[in-house]
Image (tube, rainbow, N blue to C red):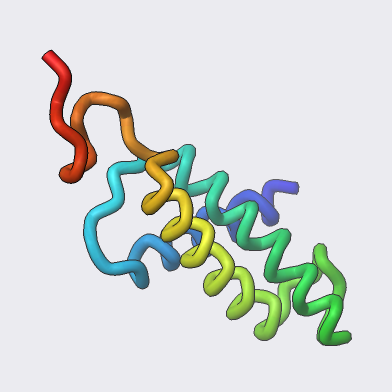
Amino acid sequence: MIGFLVAGLIIGLLARLLLPGRQRIGLLWTLVLGVIGSLIGGTIANALRSGSIWELNFVGFVCAVGASVIVLAVAERSGLLTRGQGTRGDLPRRT
């Protein structure tokens, strides 16, 4: 379980590095992002018969990082990661 969390954190950090721009999320959201990407990547690797969901392999790792980048981009575009204090540039700030 600890290995899964460490791998999720590494995958989340890599996803944040690969996505251009600055993401305003903390370490906990990075961990959640990496764990979600790990589950999706493991499922894809399992479907490709490359390994189990809980097994760390190259195909699963690459799929996990790619899935984490996509999840981060979707969450960022939909406004799920904003803190509600005028952090989005396209919305006027309420006073």
